[in-house]
Figure (tube, rainbow over the protein chains, first blue to last red):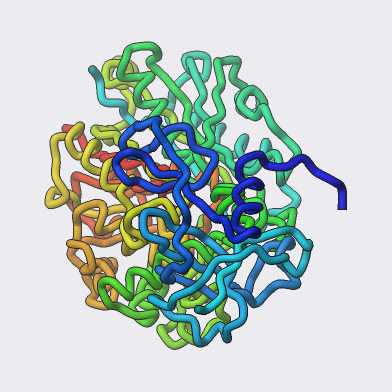
Length: 128
Length: 388
């Protein structure tokens, strides 16, 4: 694989998740976002501060993808979900659970795993 | 301010034409639209052209001048990219150009070549309309994104995959007489339910096909149409556009499309009509659930009520408010950059009585086109009306 440049704050954020030090950015009005952000798109506040990401979130929706893109060919079938961590939500791959057993409201923790097809890093959720 | 008249419109066959170049597809649609309009091409003053994935499918950027040249025009040509709403957004630019008096005749269109790169590469290309860092890298595909929205809808409002199957059955049935449609095949609810899953709960028949095709229309002022005695009874009387966070994860609701709410509100206000005045609509049903979200955002149904519309026969061709009489993206096909103009053409033909499904909406005077990009982070809504 060709060594490619890091994607700045996104890769920094993945590093933070990987070292159990995950965070999100919160504006003065409590709106949460993932980096990079210089302004809150909801209220235009530019005073964004890093806040610890809660240790667990709840699955807001999920799908088992059977027709993937080439970059996920050997991953399929796999579960992609959006998990709600309070002021911020995150999209990730659900691991360590039978896809048929994933349900809205399931409590999950967040980690960084490897994509099967490419070996690239990806956000993963595991049941808690 | 003059509401632009639709003087001519044309679409190519939508389907699998992997050997046809984008420029050839657009040339067919554009030249036919110009011919239909009865306007001297020398009078055309601008081209707005929708295209989404030309760099990936044809290794071709800078398509504006290429496409103007393909239809024999030497005019300022602008390519518009807003994912699947590229052509609807191009229409809006054309409308504004005519209304503000900068041009009397504008060509608007779009084209997409997709099947030449195969399903996997096309799925990959479509995915770039999502947030690359936070969605695509977590395995999000477009069917996957709409599957997340569908599951959230079922969870919040109820409804089932079977309700969605009725939308697929309806749109397939509507397309049976549409010679431009990619799929002219009647299906049953059982067929749709038993089709292979793409991203659960969505299956093959919940998804629009991958399509090659082009569409074009010629817009002009009311004064020009009168002066040249053109047959152009349909005007674009309202235009609206709305936006939203690109990534689904950043939105407060997964089962609502506020970009379309905003576009509809603006377009209705612009035209001076409301949802109750609308006789029929062409909406962006890239997936069956998208039709549900669209008809709710357009104000035809309350939140949570749109899911039952097709099953209840309210949006079929013999219903009170026919939706997607063309067959929609689902059956007509979805050459991404052409879709918004194909919708415009369909509405115009339904209003002037020349569409093969016009018998479903006799005496109709108001039609709407709803074109959405990505997971509805971009939306345009256009209101069209028959003028005296």
